[in-house]
Image (tube, rainbow, N blue to C red; front, top):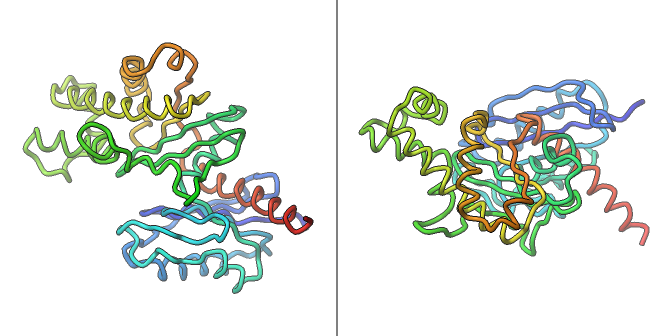
Length: 301
């Protein structure tokens, strides 16, 4: 029987999943609420239930998840307050002991990078920087198709990067743009989102135009620092707001050119993520295949 793999992308709001062949062909896919506020043990129970629901025998469980992941141990080593009691969740051990199926785990932004590098906008590129822009900012860097993890598995936690004014994620995430527009409008933050701001830009709203320009400038400042450090072949931007690349990319390019020397700017391709909601679980599948191959090679040595 052909092998089947369950790839799962655990986000703070939604968990997306797909049944895949050994070639990465999607046989079926779906999503459900993560219910992150109920904590790590609750999420574990929900994922176990999802695995039990599968009608076909599975040959692997591929997990993409929020939080900082020790990808060797398959364990959450740091998690934000959005998912209480998530740190210390030993995904690989829990899944393999209960189901006797190989399991591999990787950070969600790293998985998004792998999804884009192997299936999407960065396919065929040797060095790739990716940022996801939303409530916060996440990042990953791939060299020759391999995620660079760092000594404590926390490489590219760029949301914490310091730029003039504070942390990068507090100044250049979509949530920061929304807060500034709402503040200047003297309206509740809940009344605004990225989509509404971009509509305001199209309609000539002065505050929306000014704050979007400020957002693009601040974002490009952080991006330029990363370009100086990594000199990537391509820089990929993801996140819901980037769906309007027609508005955002020209503005980001303009500001990025102001912050970069020509040698780097002229050789850095800029694009938006193309895999959408599929990037995470496809990247988890790629990670699974890579990690399993590594483990088999290590056993032979």
